[in-house]
Image 1 (cartoon, protein in one colour):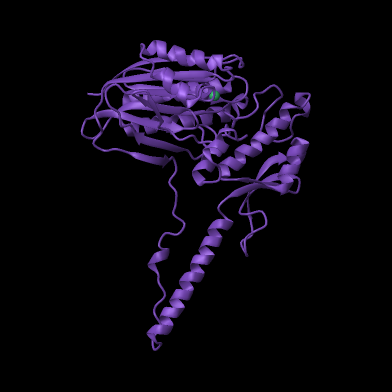
Image 2 (cartoon, protein in one colour):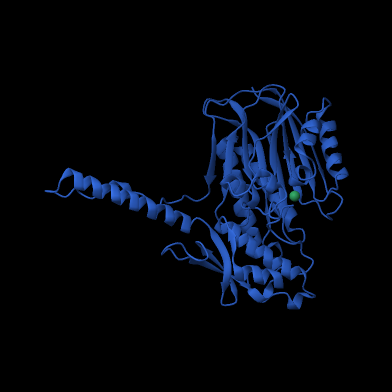
Amino acid sequence: MTRWRYAAATDTGLVRDLNEDALYVDATLAVVADGMGGHAAGEVASDIAVQVVRDQFAENPTVEGLYRGIETAHRIIQADARENPEHFGMGTTVIVVGLTVDPSGVRSPTLFNVGDSRAYQLRDGAIRQLSEDHSVAEEWVRMGRLTPEEAAVHPRRHQLTRTLGIEDMLEIDVQSVHATTGDRLLLCSDGLSNELSTESLAQLASAPVPLEEAVRLLVDGARAAGGHDNISAILLEFDEVDETTVPIKRTVSTTPRTPETAGEGARRPRRPRRVTWRSVLAVVVLLVVAGAFVGVMHWYAYSSYYLGNDGGRIAVYRGQPHGVLWFKPVKVLDTSYPLGQLRPADQGFVRQTIEEPTLRAALNYATYLHRSWALGQPSASTTTTTTTTTTTPGTSPTTTVGG
Ligand code: MN
């Protein structure tokens, strides 16, 4: 029977006016959500996430129940943002550990993550990050484009590639947590992990003091380091842990993907008759080599996206800006942001094209650029002529910057 003790704390920090983080913890569930969006919209999004996950898990305390909870929260946030223009663009991260019941009736910890809130495991003073951040810089580290050291100071380390409530499709990381008695888990928003080094986190979170005190030390540490963002932390300590009989580690999507190349391998050209074995082999080898070359070039040509100028508006293209061989970039969609509604420097960058790893990242960045401009505008009446944004000056800068 898995059991944990718990403590939690959240703090507005020293810079923000509002606390848009939300958290919840009890004997079987721990949730941290870091909301973002103009005015108080981030608070709405993070509250929805925490409440819906809690309610759905109470009804169905399984991996499926938690997954449904996160998916439902995502849909509710989207619907709320559609109905309330002042909530446009709101979103939230969510990180959850639940003691889920598996088909054998075993209760064990399972971790769910969307965004850049984090989960760490602490054992004998050592620390290990369990969650992967869904930020542009961290995705690039996983793709080998940046080193972890470069990512730590990269200007886009806070730009999220996954959030509840923003894009239609949602991808959720799910993994079983392998723990032993005495292990601690730390769930936190980036307001904690950005302020403190991993070493400090390890030291404070494993301090041999009651959990309430350790959580207080963490929050005070982040405040002392500047408290630039809302700070939230939950500490769990296992008194007893069972291992699930069906361990999981995967990413699940809310909409199924259709494999583009399904069935392609089934059809092979028939071997022509009355030709020598040797010539057939030569042709086959040639075709395989040529095919592989074209395949690799095709993959490379369309492996990324970029923002560019299309007749005075920002458009999202798939491909390499100058094309590769005969693979020309393809326009995927038009954003509604005119180039003229960007800061002058950003207009130049868009004209030169800005590469992005995913479509979502591209869209997020376009929104971010537009909002950065909108923030600098003198009054609401001159802010925007687009239909997809209601951002006004004074709105917090972006839906994509969680930091
Ligand atoms: Mn934050």
